[in-house]
Image (spheres, rainbow, N blue to C red):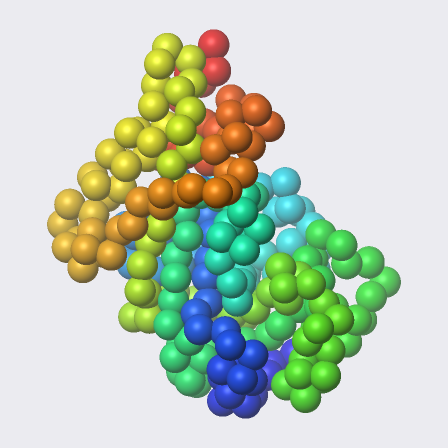
Amino acid sequence: MKLDNRKLYELLKEKGVTNLYHANTVATSITFIEEGGLLSREYVESKELYQTPQTSDEIDKLFDVFDDIFLDTIDLHKHFCRQNHYGPVLFQFSLELLLDDEFEIWVTKDNPIYWSKNSNLSDNYFQNVNELSDEWDNHEIQRKMFTVKKPSKPILFNYLESITLDNPKVLINNGVSLRKESRKAFEKATRSKSKIRDILVWRDCGHCFCADNYLNQVPTPELIQKFLPVYHAEFEE
């Protein structure tokens, strides 16, 4: 359900939200950089561009959100002191994007993977900014997902402030450094895009569980999928 952009902007300012964020894999993020903006998964698929497969794709199609772009109100990696499960690349956007009437913004009450097939729109989305304000503390921060409905082109890079890439501190088979390979991929993708290159940030975690999780909890095929720009089956051997 479409919310009033300006009322939504004022509510987020009141709640201390300063930015909106989108996390993804290295490979999908490079597609965004090459195309000049965030893209819905439906758009990438229809244009036969590359994106990392997601287990939620069929659910997203079922609930008609495959053509939406999802944003968070917080850096979940920093907030939870662990890696973002959607990917090691974090796009940070200015909150001012909400003042752009080009974008139709809806806000979920929960992640679509938990929606019921028999649910109504009002079960899944906040109906208006007043309801969102009243229910703000009753829904976990990561489940209040801001969605830009059905963009027909690359969007939001006019509001892009930074792109942050995790350092997994992991060597995979044959001594391949995920840090070096992912950074090399971003440097190559931004070679002719100086404005993007200037806002690349390498995340350097201190008191965080991300490196330990990447090393001990994330299997090698998943690390390859998240950190390498294209799939390399030989790295799994």
